[in-house]
Image (cartoon, rainbow, N blue to C red; front, side):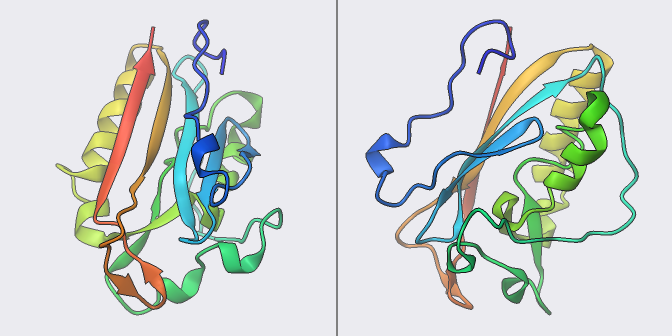
Length: 177
């Protein structure tokens, strides 16, 4: 929360303490889950453009987080044989900086960091991917440090698919000093 040199705490999920998980800390990012929805409430990542690296993406090996019960996480069963991507909320390259860059990159492949996103949205150069590229490229090119909070907009009216209510909207808040 002090990464930017000013205090920027995680969003307050205390009003949702009956459904929100504890903060799950990874290398350079955190996730707070909505346990009944089995998806993240939000993620928060710190990006250091001065020491950023770009590890190769050899293969996607998604794993469950052992700190949460399996029934509180959405796994591969939602993504098979359909146009849904495992949409990274924390982009794999965002926390990939400093001596822990590879571990941080690998941490982003926890299902707690994935939300079902239609492929056209997730990979769209003028949509989600375009926004992610804009943030990371400017952070890298200008040696910035930024903090990004991202998540799905969880609505009671979200359509259900394979036992998971699919978010139709997402948010991203970028902070820098």
